[in-house]
Length: 193
Image 1 (cartoon, rainbow, N blue to C red):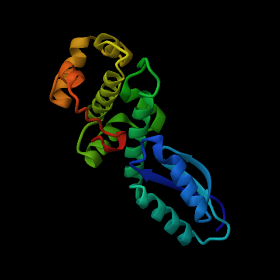
Image 2 (cartoon, rainbow, N blue to C red):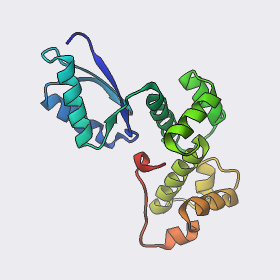
Image 3 (cartoon, rainbow, N blue to C red):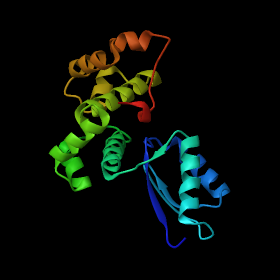
Image 4 (cartoon, one colour):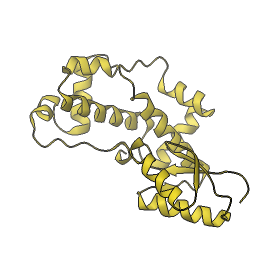
């Protein structure tokens, strides 16, 4: 095979499996040149292109990932990754609207991105981002290091009341009830839709 081969990966929105995937591919004789959320660049001079695709597919399926098959799926995955990256560093200070951020990073009109995302995920970008933020709220509640007001500030909510309403709408219980329950349920980012 000549030159590196690039793959876009569906549902790889958490960094927890990057090391495993890299190790498993190397065991199959595939050199990982770059591996980041949603994107994999490999080479294997002693393998044919089909052998590389087969090795990558096998490793990804074994770890519950899929290769993105078209540009629409790739853009959908890139939207997810950009939104998840926004929540990595707190406090969250949204300097530009989510629509502007996505349009500038992906070099596409936001209306196009929004239609594409909704068609592929059966939810809107806004609702998806709210669900991501609520998962972060659950994490912060479980850490027991911040008050509800602090959590609202960390996640750039206009008020704790706004956060409380969204939390109850998404989770089905108040933040206080969630905090007091012994059965905390959280979702991995790649399970959110």
